[in-house]
Length: 184
Image (cartoon, rainbow, N blue to C red; front, side):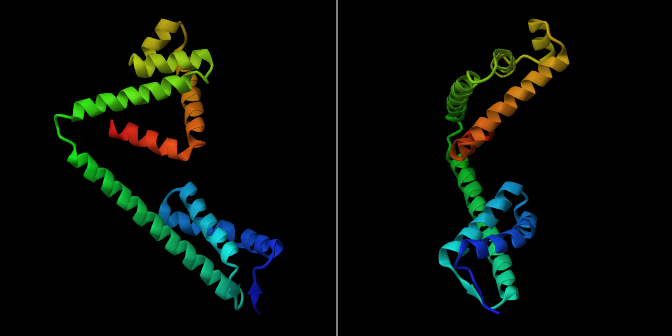
């Protein structure tokens, strides 16, 4: 039996049949649910673009798993190269320049966070400012704002969650921010 993926309905059936199991398969290699789903989505998109014909369900299944496996390996290689580049650039920095770069990156991060705080409710923004800009402990913030310690923790958690959510919409920016946080 030949399987020809030439219409949306055939593609949908194949997608629904294999998507979940392929994601679980990819997760074994990539260790991140988002990365695994991205790898599987990439394989399905490629399959749709190329419009490959298969000589039966076993050939289709083998193609999908093999493609996901190779996509995972490529992703791992790419991340390894990125980490190696970052390590190389870090090693090339003159030790005398390190404080300068740290201060510059902290200033950039502070500016970005300050801008993002304008989107939060005032109490959440105030707590995050006190915590990260003035480097106060949660106990000190609670005393200064006359709030319970748990309330401070809750507002801080909700504020940081909102900021992470806004950053995740722009994956390039989120990657840059993560780099800044780890670099500083």
